[in-house]
Image (cartoon, rainbow, N blue to C red; front, side):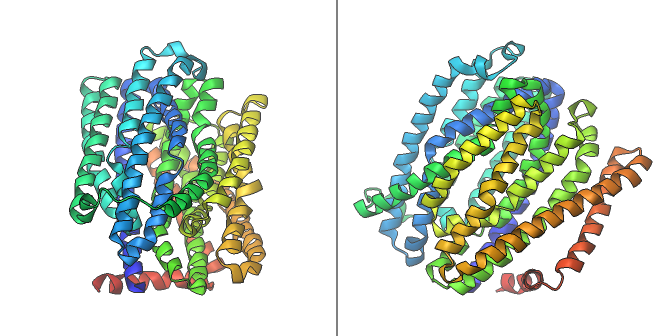
Length: 519
């Protein structure tokens, strides 16, 4: 089992990260042509619609996460009837959720003028919005079968399917933008590809798990329903926190600053979410593996995996944050032009927000693996209130724009999430090791975060004042900045962390990968 878990984790992480990298390239290609043919106003509209639909997505209440958690044990025990019952329940839930989102989405239409400061800058906004809404609604049909692949440590199968249709979608959208310049056809292609992707993965799952079609009448027991309902109640808070923290930035900016600023920020957002997407695929793809390990109740092993996971994530976040900081300005100039640049202060805030948010991913992964949805959900209600209050205050009262919205998110993470999520894992997961929480939070988490942020900003300042001023080519500047930052950061990590247990574990993992895959 241990060998199988490791191999599954490596396959999931590798395939998902590779797909994410290529997907990023496709998104950049599409957005570049989108900017050129439709402009920053339509780009801002696209970003706004994405946020609105993310908010409406609150309706799914995290049911998929609860079901994935519930599937770990029956899949490990090969209890086909229970697996089928859970999947049947998820199917019915997703149909209901799709209908709810469709109705709620239509109710939003009369309020669009209030959400867009420069509403009359674009014609046919309600029509475009309905197309965007349709894509969100159809995404809930047939897609429920992806959950069994995720729980069965085969998320790479689902990701590969999505990637294939992403390529088809990108090619068609680029053709439409290039030859026709139609935003409505651009959105229509998205709808068709989403639906086709879900239908294909549904048939793939039916062939692999043939018993699902034979056991369509299986239903979960009242006890199982109560357990899922209990977890869903917990997830309501988590979903609320996630929606407010991650899906209201463009809504606030659109309402108080206009679509133009949303469009400019969308480029930075695409870069950070793309990089975060790669990291999240790497660090969260092992959730099912950790869940499988937890079922064996080997607390010492799980604690060791947690520490290694945290430090590996920390190294990855440090490298990516440093690279974003030194490459943002020359890359944005090269890609979209000087008119799409944000201030140096705002760029610094974007990187800090990214770092603080991404370093949480280990705790989030283990909270899901342990099924700690209820206590984490209660925390997320306070997270939503604090974040919305701080972001609105800094945006409206102090007129800080994008920086204000993101500073509110960063402050919320530091005030609440940074300590609560690890504490939850130590108190409910590693019960016999809960005394180690304070040491973890103050030193492994807090001190490392502060030291690394200070270091990369100091190096960035040196690069700006010694290298940037002597290079005129934006392409050369981008690559030189990245190269210098990576070299200096690597030397720093080897000096500071080279003798640590987590670093040695990481080196050991890399050495074992070829042998494990050969088996």
